[in-house]
Picture 1 (cartoon, one colour):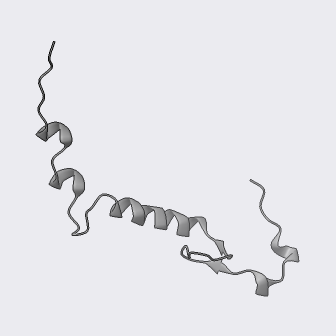
Picture 2 (cartoon, one colour):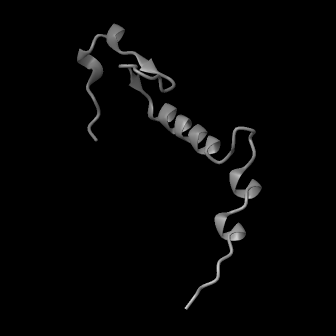
Picture 3 (tube, helix red, strand yellow):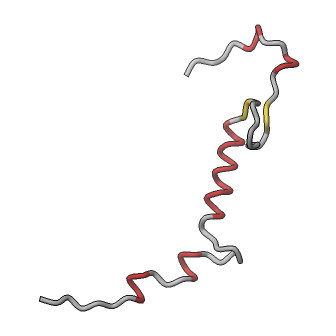
Length: 70
C-alpha cells in the first residue's frame, strides 16, 4: 500500500485517534486497531462474570446423549 504524502496537508488538520472512537472521522493507528481487537478477543472468551467460557461451561456434545435408530 502506498504511503500517503502528508506534506501538503496542514498539520492542524491531521488528528489521529489512539483508540477507536464511534463516529470519529479521524485517522487511527494500526496499533490502536490491533489493541482493540485483542481486547475484544479476550472479552469473547469470558462471560459477564469473567469466567472462561470454554472451561466453565459444558459443551452440547457433553450433555446431550442420543441413540441412533435404524
